[in-house]
Amino acid sequence: MPTAPTIVAIAVAKTTTSTVATPSLVLQVGDVVSAIAITEGSASGAWNAPSTTLSNSGISTLQTHVGGTDCGGQAFTFTVAAGTTTGTVTATISQASESLTLFVVVCRGASQPTASQSLLVAGSSRTTSYSSTYADSVVMTGIGDWAAAAAQSLVPTSSTHASGTPGPSAAPNSDATETGIYTHYSAVYDDQVSTSPISYGIGGTGTGPFTIVLIEIPAYVAPVPPDEGAYNDNAESDMWSFAGVGIGDGSF
Amino acid sequence: MATTQNIPNTRLTTAQLFEFAKTPVGAQWALITIDRTISGGLNSLTIAETLEIDIERSTDGGGTWTPVAGITAIGGVLVTKGITRATETLTVGIPASDTVFRINVIPSTPVRVAGTVDYFP
Image: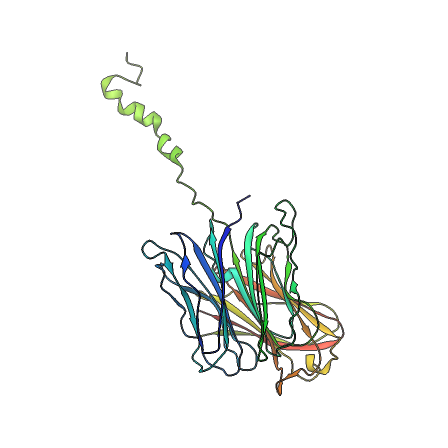
């Protein structure tokens, strides 16, 4: 069983001016940065490409949803590369004066997520059931309630981390903000042991609409080295290669 | 450009599976959209009634199926900030070009369902 990624940094940044950046993050080469941005959805402004001042091998956008009749959402990720390892992460929407929240989780000992390790829901569902592709992944969620209802509890709730017990583990960070325009939530769960469906979202009642963005950050899996046994398959031939000097051909 | 497959207008009295053709080469995302507004659809229900939609995928041509994600949509005419909710959407990533998706739709009460599955590069 792989070792769950280590969460080394968490940042939640908010703005009312359509561009939001985290504080400066001090990271290491190989750290996997995953981010979820949620907008108030007052208008259908398109997402601009996310950016960072950290050296990286390319930012991958995992999910994008334009708001306007619900909250907008964006998920992206990148791996810190050699060079500048201290810097900020920024999300931007092409809509003036739009409230925007950016939630960033940095993991060490992780694999960069792919699109198939993410999802985005928009509608009346308060939760989404998600089946992790690997055991012991970190899962992060960002949720927007367009109705700006009073903050509800997160699902699953925090519990004592127990690596030997399947199910939701501790939530190192949760944040619920009601701005009067939208209600934003962010949560990260370390070491989701099980790959069975787990329900992520918020509790309570109300019909939203809700925008739920989820990223699964898998543990790092080292590449399998080539089979060196293949080079030994010709040992007999190697012996015969010495036959010219009387070795291996029984001609002593 | 997206490739679209239809979820045909179907009256559900119990759970039903809808299976779709293999995802096109190069597609990275599958967007499932359910239309709430069709006659007899989600908007015709009460708020206490629900429609569960679960997505499964297969990467071996339908031999084995793995759960991916699911939602539970709420019935009724849902109005927020003067806007009546018209759709339920769920976007998931596609792990390989030979992926096949199916959705299991489970109503709490008889209801009509219709929509689309769009594959995006």
